[in-house]
Amino acid sequence: MEQLKDAAAANGPLCVGLDTDPSYLPAPLLKVFSSPADAILTYNKEIIKRIAADKSACCCKIQIAYYEAMGLAGLKAYVETIRAVKEAGLIAISDIKRGDIADTAKAYARAHFTGEFETDIITVNPYMGFDTLKPFSDYCAPLPASAGKEAAGGKGIFVLLRTSNPGMVDIEQQELKKGGRVLDKTGEELERLGAEFRKIYPKQTCSPVGAVVGCTEESDARALRDAYPDIFFLIPGYGAQGGAARIAATLLDKAGGTVNSSRGILCAWKKAPELADKVESGNLSLKELADAAGNAALAAKEDLLNAKKELGI
Image 1: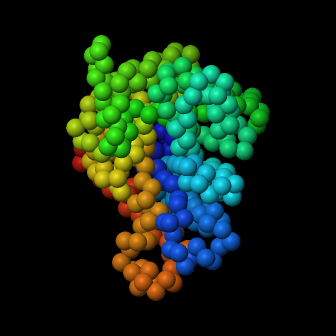
Image 2: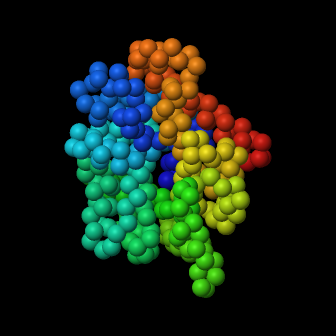
């Protein structure tokens, strides 16, 4: 998480969401590849190559569901995508939203923080109780310099706090009898975990426990940023989900965060006027798709940085 915060300061706050579905690629182009999973992996690698070269993003978020839906070939593409992100020098966030009890949670943590699926940071769902977070946070202790390659640690988690979907009002916004909302209770727990971590590891500048905070409602953005000034945010909802750069920039204040854009980048080719004729004729190349995605990432970075500047952040 500390590395991600530094990368966001250096390269801008954009997180490129590789929630890549086969339907995001033109049908004629899909036929060129041996399988949809092969097409997705090739497209992902081309996008990663561009954003790393352009320094347009600080990380990539890989939503595992899109890869699970393609079966074993999809999971192989998932593993290879994570590897490509890390080899490019970017932070890999695996959007898995796991949350379960006791040994099951331990197995999920072991699966995604070690072995073939190993990643840097994962998303976690706390709604089965805060005890379900511990198996994941146990992997967050910083690794000593002497740690070998097989050592497990130094990871991060983003815990669901205020999501970007309309249905978040059904639970997250519900009032508690003791006062406050469900999401406020979650935020208090994340603050407690962060304070506990900083007490044990005072040299760390950023808690490894971050929060997922959607940017689709302007009324919530300032209040949430002020309520949790020390928590680093993963901010979905920007772009295709309707979140404005100004809302996202508000959430980037204080401890900061990273702003995810998925379809706005993956499907940028659909809105590129220079590609309209090729879209119509079905002659688009993978390079042209990836170039459009790379240009969209640069534009998103500039949009977010301009919004931060306008707000004085």
